[in-house]
Each structure stands twice: as C-alpha cells, then as structure tokens.
Amino acid sequence: MEASKFLLNMNKHIATDDTVFSAQIKPFARILAEHGLDFKRAKTTCLQINTGLVCNQSCAHCHLEAGPFRGESMDLTTARQVIDYASKNRFEIIDITGGAPELNPHIAMLIAGLGRYTPRLMFRSNLSALNNGQNDDLMALLRDNRAVIVASLPSLNQSQTDSQRGNRVFAGSIEALQKLNSLGYGKDGSKLELDLVSNPTGAFLPPSQEQAAKRYRQTLHRKWGVTFNNFYCFANVPLGRFSKWLKKSGNLDSYLEQLAVAFNPCAAGGVMCKSLISVSWDGSLYDCDFNLAAGLPMNRRKTHISDMQGRPLPGTPINFGDHCYACMAGTGFT
Image (cartoon, rainbow, N blue to C red; front, top):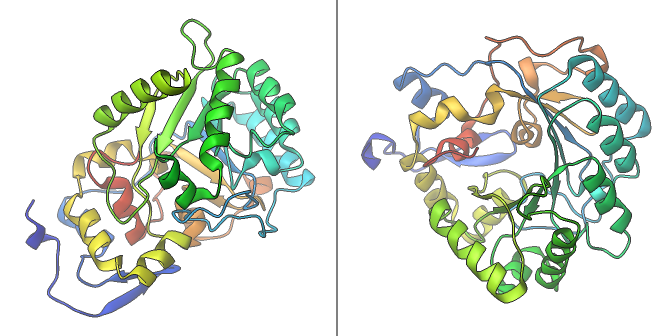
C-alpha cells in the first residue's frame, strides 16, 4: 500500500499508553478495521513468564526499561503459582524471559519446575548475564532440561553492540556462545537448540532475515568457531526506553512512519498474542510482553495467575495499541 494511505495530514501528537505516538499515522485500531482484521485469540499454546525487570544491562532499545537498578522481580510465591498453573494446563511452549531471567533468585526452581510440564522450554538470555562468572551451573541446568536458548546478539560489530548494551558486552557474549557450543548447544545432532536474535541499533527496521542469518552464520563460525540453529530479526517496539530515545533524538515520527508504511496485514495470522499468555513478575496476566510494558492487561482488567483456572478461551478479544504496528511491519515480529 502507498505511504499516503497510512499517513494523515496532521502535525500534532497524541498520547497512547506510556509513549507519544505521531498523529501522522492512523491509529492501529483504524488500520485493522480498514483491512477487516479482527484481533481475537486462537488456541493459546504458549505460556510466557517475565521473571522481572532486573538486568545487568540498560539497553537503549528495551521496551521494559529493564536495568541494574530495577527492583521488580518475581517472588517465591508467584514462582510457585506459575509452576502450578503450568502443571494444570500443559502448554506446548513455555517461554522464560525478563529483564535478565538469570538474575531472578528463583530461576533454577522455575527452569526445573516448568521443564517437567512442556515439551519445549525456552529461555531468553542477553548472554552477558549468563556468562557473568557465576552461572556455569545454570548453563548445565538449561542443558539438562533441554531448554531452547534464545540469545540476543544485536550486531557482529563490537562497537555497535557495546554502544547499545554496555562496555565489553560483545566479548562476553561471544564467550558465552562458545561455552554453550561446548555443552552441545547449536551442534548438529545434539537436540540442544541455540537461536540468535538481533534488534537494530538505531531508528530503522531490521534487514532481510535470510541475508542477516547467512552473514551471522558465516562470520561467527569463521572468527570465533560459533555455531547456532536459527536466527531472527525483530523490529524494536516504540515503548519504554526506546520510545524515550526516539523522542530525545528526534526520530519518533520517522520511525513510526516506517512501521506504518511497512504494515503487512498478512502478518496478522502469526502475531504471538493470538497464541500466548504473558505472566508478569507480580503474577498479572497480559496478552504479550509488549502489552505488559504498555500497561494493557489481558481482557482489559487486572487478573492474577492464581485466579486463572485454564487457558484463555479462543475468540477472546486481544488488547492492543499503536505499539502493535511493530509486530506487523514487514514479515512480522514472530
């Protein structure tokens, strides 16, 4: 579709959730209506658990504004409630994320407890928290539970990675990948899956995933002997710290317009909110981790995991906002 069909001739701004969206783009609800798209749940197959906002990094693109000075962290009672809920519902996928989930004091219990109740346990890592000199036992625990490790590596360039994530993060990330390879992760025939994720380091959309995967695979193996399974490029979502950076740098309008112009109605069928339920560190439920960041609870009301008996029902409306443009730009977020 032409850019002019997405952009409105207005020069003011409107507030949406915790960010400020340009009124030069149509509200996401309007674009859905124009394409006849109805955002409702299909079968919920994935349970995602956000263990908290504590992180060893303060990434510029973080939609949750996680960092070393955040105090939000899942406590023991909530962790046990999450495991109990998983045991009763047996999700096809369980996805552990953060912040840096490695830094939650109950993470070993969560991995071992949740691993019993799903055929596919996923663990999202920024690599430097996993390779902080104290987590070799955690790597072994992930291996023993056959957890899929989804590791974030924004760039093959040391300076770009360190500028986004902190001094010496790139070197520590490469060392972490080498350790995981030594445990069998990312190796042919090991059945230990190691996937890499890259987010752009600026106010632009990701490159071709296929081309980027080829470049990462060749460069990591040639320079450091690192191998991995799958590679994913994701657009940054204009929430939290990334939204603030966009405003401060004067890139907000141009970035939102890029997302709007790249809107792909065909991506609607694969967005994660249709098959995922997200649990916050305090046990509150959301349709996805981005809605958690935006403060948009599932079913538009606060619900705690201890009050949830089963999976969300198919056909349940999904809460959304203008940040959802990021999940439907190009080939989509997931």
